[in-house]
Length: 134
Image 1: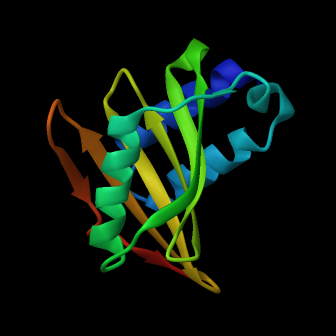
Image 2: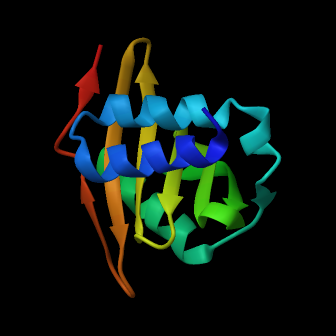
């Protein structure tokens, strides 16, 4: 499969599937491909970063984020990156044209928590009700 197809599959899964772990695995598979990684450039979007920081406070009480790094893939209008939330490794992706994304937080061995989020002009919403622990 090529990168265009992988991104399309991720987008379709993101819009249609309810199993957050399956969706995030598609993203992780994509992000491991060198052809995809070279497309991204480090970039900062204050609104996206603040939204993720606020979402993390809902997932982890009183969380703060640090070592935040965001990459932007202009071809797909796709943001992705990683950070630490209270020393918990976390990663995200965000489809700019949809205004929606997903965060994954490693809360311990075999314990991942996922949340979808939507950015609006001045507010964000999240759906962290669906948790996946294996």
